[in-house]
Image 1 (cartoon, helix red, strand yellow):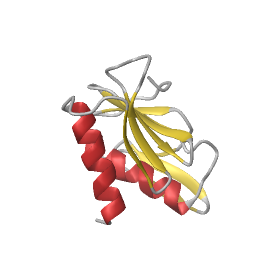
Image 2 (image 1 turned 60 degrees about the vertical axis):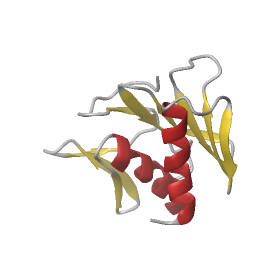
Image 3 (image 1 turned 60 degrees about the horizontal axis):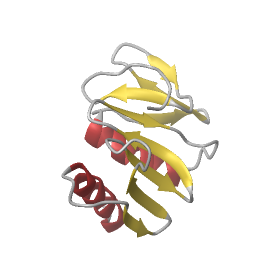
Image 4 (image 1 turned 120 degrees about the horizontal axis):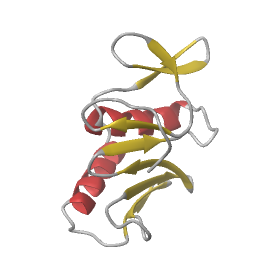
Length: 122
């Protein structure tokens, strides 16, 4: 795991433990912060774009239209940790799996922290 990835996960964990208020990580184009409107929600921003919202029950992710390797790596870092899944690319299209079939990825997909469901960002 890269140092920048470990810092992101450490920042999310600190916010979950309530060790941090407001912005906890503002480093390498990534911001981890407690949501100012919904205090039980943690936001992860990459280049100023909201790529993940994490609550106690789910994680919502979005590429914000930037289907780059780095955006996918940041999203996968969080999905592997909090939803035990990941997105992958095949023939320039992003997918995720529900265990039975491959499903095209779309911005705003929400994963339960135990199992997956589709829906809007929290």
